[in-house]
Image 1 (cartoon, one colour):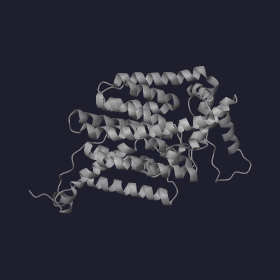
Image 2 (tube, rainbow, N blue to C red; image 1 turned 30 degrees about the vertical axis):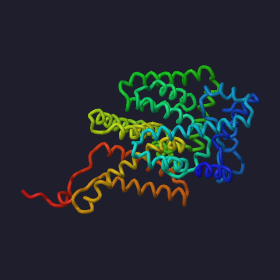
Image 3 (cartoon, rainbow, N blue to C red; image 1 turned 90 degrees about the vertical axis):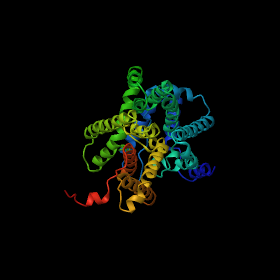
Image 4 (cartoon, rainbow, N blue to C red; image 1 turned 90 degrees about the horizontal axis):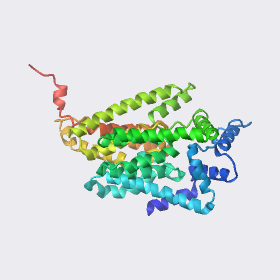
Length: 403
């Protein structure tokens, strides 16, 4: 209740619904017989070509979802505005609760005693870094809620059908969400063929949109291109941070960022497949593997945003907590000079990154690599958890061996 009151107060006293307003404008444009893509592109171009630019002004956001969503927008035009806003707010809130529920299912029984108290705070710490993205009203909360909720039956009971339906359905709105089909491959059995079929259906629907709505599809691609070329909204993934850095240095981001994305995805994929093999050999528990595989799947997403990280906050928290607890067991021997654990150092670095990230985002300007640093630190701890702590003694490391 305290979290709900705090979010409501934040929404009342500050900006709120900036993403939801984009959808509302698109519905209103269609209601008046217009084209939401053309209207958004015209607004952005007018802003970029204004005679007296002010650096503090923000570029207007445009509708950048697939033309396959247009029939749904037309259907929503018959709903009264007040009712539509209420229903959408309930959908976002329900999606957020589904995200929390799915993450809660990954916790062990002894972890749930403290995690249930922490869940409301996730609203303020998406991706473990403080941010007010819950107020945006982004459709990602709804989509990820459905996808993650459907994943529970998959990794618990091996029933992945509704997960694939949820992913393909979500990709109609956000095409890059098709990368989530990697999760069943990592944690399920014999899922290569079903995942490939789901991916083919998703890509087929995307290609079909270009045939059914050729004009709108072209405008949709132009709107996406403007988002990168003019708005410079690259996201917080590895390739996104590189693209943002190249732009700030005045250098072209294409195709360097694309090549880096492919290379980084291949590296992450190899790491995850190696860890999956260790799970099959019994060298890593399935309970430990599930959140690591889910966070690793997020790294395949080409443009990671704050609302994307929000859906993975609970798995990230579990990874960090388990690594910290595992490292804690080696602290007493470490202090007595008898053993050394790299996981201890990794946990200390994670805690430092977590504190530093939240301090920087509160007292200073938003520094775009911060989210990525915490995400990679958590993923690194998850990878390290698959391997036993080093039993190498400090004295053996520092004292040369004698014959």
